[in-house]
Length: 213
Image (tube, rainbow, N blue to C red):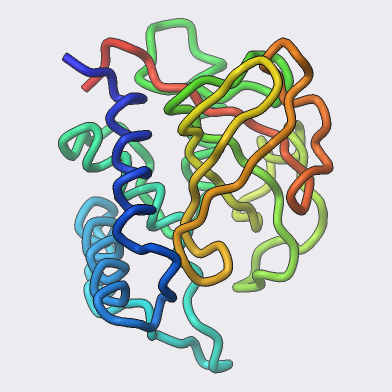
């Protein structure tokens, strides 16, 4: 049986392949984003998300950010809807949950680690602080320590689809309004040490246990 991490990475690759760089407000991409929101809404008990899609705007006329819905939908598919993941519209929700789980002694289905402490591998989620999202979140740089005491905060997570000693490829949602791949340069031992790449502020790595469904 394939691991959660492998299924998550394969799902992300599939989403990249079907979006083909098309934008969030185009069909059928708009409908696929609506499905991400439906999954998050059902899993998190926020049923109003059933009415959100790639064209939904807030009171300021800005489109809803859907990158966390993308990650949550991927985990939901990869785990068969497992109840232990912190499905949410905020990346900070699952990040804080993974950090808390890392501090507990018993086996956990997923944990967070400070970026740079482990080599990246396929199926990890890597997280960076992002500025300018708004919605009441703290609009100042967040690192590993601050993430444990501040909620919510603006951030973005990508799914690692390949990782070697010198570079990793990631796929994320709501990057330039589509599903997009990015490349990070690693330190020669598979670790992300240069945290200033691709808008910078990378601070956390989330890893799934091999034996949890």
